[in-house]
Length: 257
Image 1 (cartoon, rainbow, N blue to C red):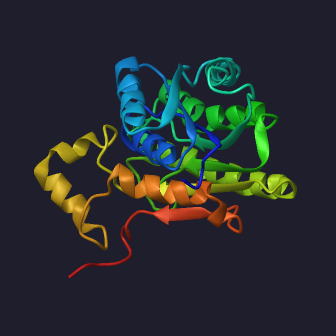
Image 2 (cartoon, rainbow, N blue to C red):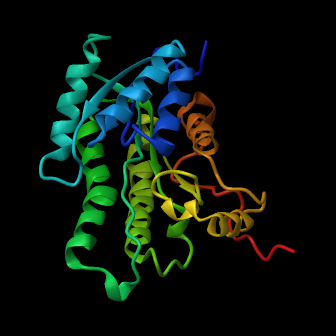
């Protein structure tokens, strides 16, 4: 029996990449997984199929994040989907994974792009949690997918990095607030992971260079992050809260020779 048997988990942005890996991993641990997606229904259905084929339980829900009323719409869709499996609309694990990137130095960041990346990466998680706290059971888990960019100087990702810094601040504060309910709140900071968002890795030279920045001399995979999330979602992580967990594979620890 998995560590999450009888639990319900919500994973935002679960149709592809890291989110898909997390959804599949939590399902393998026995959780009923709400697979959220924003636009790519086919990809979300693929995630659902992968979970159910492996013997897990899941359902899909669509909400476009970064729009007015997105959190309310998301939880309304969650309530509808979860009732097909249980009479309880409660949730045990919330994973804020959905996000968008913005590759631009400070001088090239437009107002509209800045607002959009903050709306999806920082504002949406805030209000998803605000609206979800009355559904989250005591002893539950909140896991925010941040980024190694939040702790490194990343000129080409400055606005994106700022959103992840905001997410880490939310993590620390909610951890203190929700401690009396035995709810843990942590962030996970991936490094360079092979997903759609890291499109620059399609260049073999860039891929080789990025791999060299890791202590393991390889690129991260969604499963590397999903396994960390699964631990934080499990009972074994009960004494860890308010932390930003480096899951970068030792990204830029120092020069490699």
